[in-house]
Length: 304
Ligand code: CP
Image 1 (tube, protein in one colour):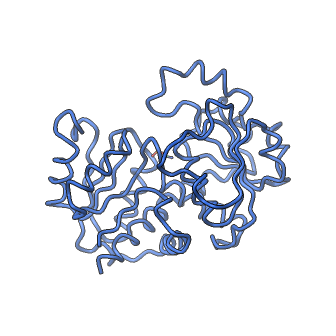
Image 2 (tube, helix red, strand yellow):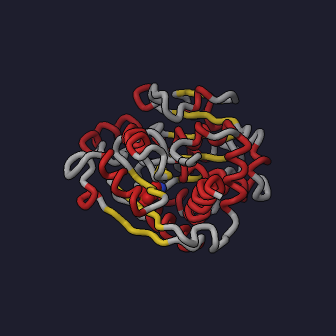
Image 3 (cartoon, helix red, strand yellow):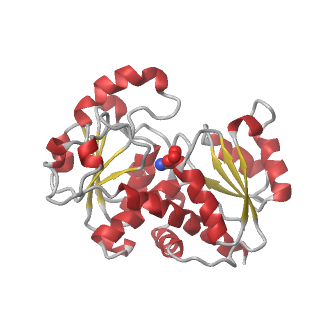
């Protein structure tokens, strides 16, 4: 059966651990005969670079399609795009505006095209893989099974990144606090909902509550792609949730600081913290490539 990698919540703990292990290995025979389509309805630097380099690591070849070329539901339907790609590619890794389009493509192609989610409005699962690999490097000697008991605090808008990260961490036994003003807290959604995973999850408006004992402090942009019209209001509403020297002082001494990037310096995080000794953001970027390898290897394993 074709495997897809669309959300973390579709994985068991054992599968997530196996993907993380596969992520750290380079084997140029895995995609030896594979052509991979990279489809981006929204801009990307890290994810596109990670996908292209990871496919190269595994011996495959990529073709890139941008928003204008693909024209999803404007030039042609999501279903016909999927059917077309399935004739020439074994895997389509896609950054889509609407998460529901993965299901449309999956159904239209009758699972003949393996799908990888490179970010939708609901989930960013390859980012979450990179993040747990990074946390494991700093706090568990590189072993994601050692994350049980690690305390992670997320401050600010509870984005797609926060959802996938929280699901991954809870599966691995870490505890997660999501601190945000009420309108920016975890939205109700059947997709990638950490409340559906058993574990220690705290939703709070209190920054001190979230940060007490935190080993990891994570933040993301306040103005996600597509929300630019709300920028001024969001900056005002979320201002108190900035990760800066004062908020960081509320976490455990030496807590690591994470951000999926791109960062809006001076908004959700200050220069001092982003560039400071506790920041591990460049290790996160390094592991974006590892994470893509993990997702691709997991998909291909099922084919063999
Ligand atoms: N973190 C992340 O997804 O970065 P890009 O938008 O640059 O791919």
